[in-house]
Image (cartoon, rainbow, N blue to C red; front, side, top):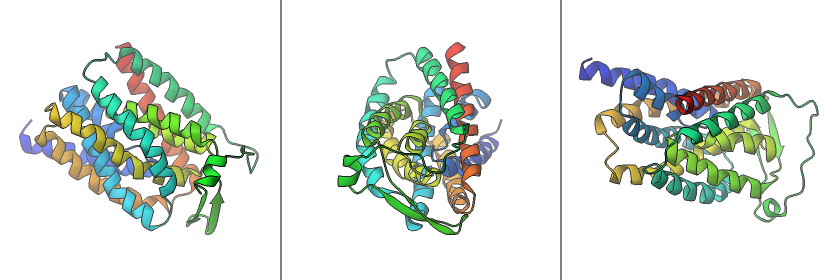
Amino acid sequence: MTPLFFTLLVAAISLSAGVLGSLVGVGGGIIVVPALSLLLGVDIRHAIAASIISVIATSSGAASAYVRERITNIRLAMLLEIATAAGALTGAFLAAYISGRWLFILFGVILSYTSWSMLQKKKTAATVLPPDPMADSLRLHGSYFDRALGQQVTYRVARTKLGLAVSYVAGTVSGLLGIGGGVLKVPVMNLAMGIPIKVCSATSNFMIGVTAATSAAVYFMRGDVQPFVAAPVAVGVLLGAKLGSRLLGRLPNHVIRIAFVAVLLLSATQMLWKGLR
């Protein structure tokens, strides 16, 4: 395979990863890592490092558009990012010492269960959420205009402490495995905290760039970031993320949910396969 063909192929794969990652708020690493390591034979550490760069590119390409459209809950994002960034540092340092076999299996099982939970349609129009004094005092509740519905959607945030705990775990997973922490944060924000799926995706996109930047510094210092791999990944994912950000507001919620479940199942399959291999 010639260097030019390799670069174009990586950029094309990354473009698709950017579109999907920006739509569901998980970054492009779920597609980039297996594509680089399994299909193109790139060393797994270099693939994970390039994936971290791709997550930053996804956030850079999509987050600004979601903030401009007032879908992102910035107050909630900044709060959860404190725990996520701490987890990202933990994961990046642990990556050099921990064998990921059982970790892969554990998260494969967790993501399988989460995807099943996301598919369950709630029959009640309004789920009763417990009062959250922390969310009230920090004014985390919000609203946004849903273009697909043609109306303003108002929501209240619940279980903020659970969100902080899961955000730390999500940051650790992101730094350790090179995937966006949104695979854990988006389901928790949607199912447990009562936040609409579009807001979850937009808010996750806002956060994952900061999370990835935190762990990217560690990978860079170790020499795992290879420019000839990371550069086409970053360009492709950035262009894909910009395209995906244009689609989010126009797509109905159930389409976003189905796309996210598909990403979860893909992630679960990859992690179980790596762990059992």
